[in-house]
Image 1 (spheres, rainbow, N blue to C red):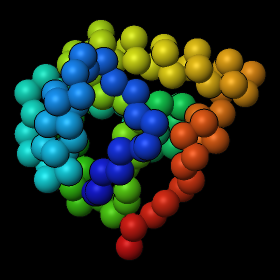
Image 2: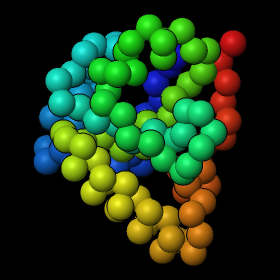
Image 3: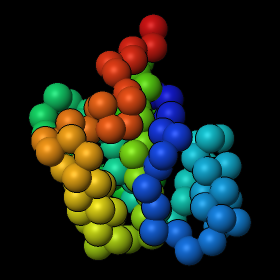
Image 4: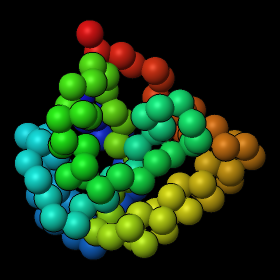
Length: 112
């Protein structure tokens, strides 16, 4: 499994320095205590999912041959819920529908 952080990723991190530090760790798949990521659905159900980042580093997920689009990042599950809420508000404001894929300009990219 590969991670792709979308260009307009949502985050609750206060500083650019902290955010960039998290991005570096995600890019090299290092464990990060307390990091939650908001992704597109991994198993074709729902609009978005919240995962503890370290869960996605487990062998079950690593064996999957796909790219996971990271739509948001947060320091806690509650923070991730707030980020999801912000994303949905912005999507509805722009499209008047829950069109997450168009908002983030993502498609069903599969890695072989």
